[in-house]
Image (tube, rainbow, N blue to C red; front, side, top):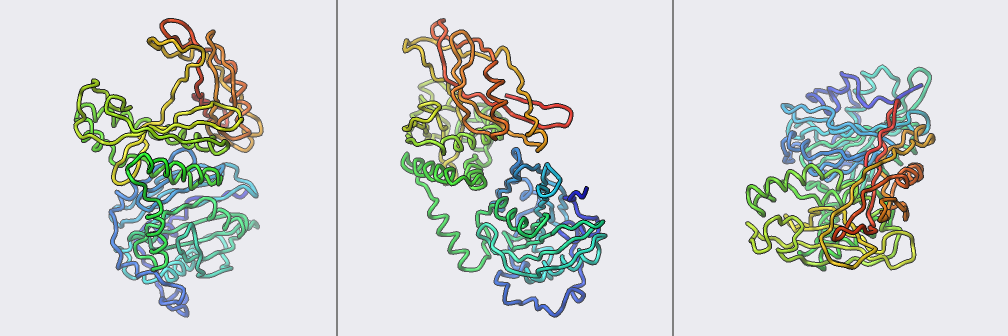
Length: 491
């Protein structure tokens, strides 16, 4: 069985984004001018650059998605896994930011994709994208133990609205064939490269279209692209008002209804609080701010994932978004007493959803608590609210707790495909602690039935109001983590 390697041979790695670029360009098809008509971007050496360690630090992996704030990048590995970062060379200002690969490594499911960056300042001889791609192709052909045959050389290609130059090669090894695409652009002071492998050229194009999202941060791109980016930025500028947040969430809902997970994830990633420890400390004071920042950082990955699942669920419904501005006494993160003042007051909002159709599921759901930081709305917390159904009497509430959890059986088909992920289930916890499932909120259809079957068998210590048990509506989460020996599911 032929498996795609996500790592390049050492000598090729030394060229493609890992070590000093020392190619003899005289060998690399001098017939092609470095001032090709294809190339419109500014020379690489003229671009400014952020330090590679800082660039790498803005990257993160959540489930099967990688995002990098510096490049405005989001990569979604469908039925795949991601490793990041793979390699960093601080001295040479180069890195292989991530590798994505298919979990099922057989035709036609297998693929791999690497993202590589190489500082323009460290490569002053690179004057065009065609020159770079041509040199990479030449060196790969020269050094690889595989047989590489260029089938399309130095062509322009649009990837997520950004202009790249690419080359595609046919690779033969031990009688088997696959295709490899190398694509590059100048982005924020770096040569930004993609190294993609698939079983056919159509699959290469499909992977580029479905996996990559770029937010158009290339300040040196051609004027039309810069204009497009400016227009996009202006169109997505939301004022610090209830109406502004409503517009943002309405746009997010529209993206979710378009069934484009990459775009949904990209928008959610922009809602994270940047430099959260500094912000919480400024806003709530040193002691309280540090505690809140720690809690925020620990819950960030899970909150982002569950927040995304909520929008997948809401996209299947018709409903209304409501926004309420909170006063200091009602702020979610204000742990002070009611009459205490914040160290640095900031506007905060709570967003909710009201379902207006007859579909299954809760009639109302909390969306989240938001604040306005550095010119954007940020998700401060994704609430897990309990809605009391069986009483209207006031009194102290004691939340219930899970006392018996049945682990779901990993579906055989999902195991074969190595599927993993989270399933959200809307449930009612009865006064006697038993569970009634309303519906599946979101999750892979091959995993959802197993999650429902398990959750129906869970047992809770009931929620009480003034000491009396009540029915409550909550959302339960089941995470499927695949391993060959066993399946681990976590709530």
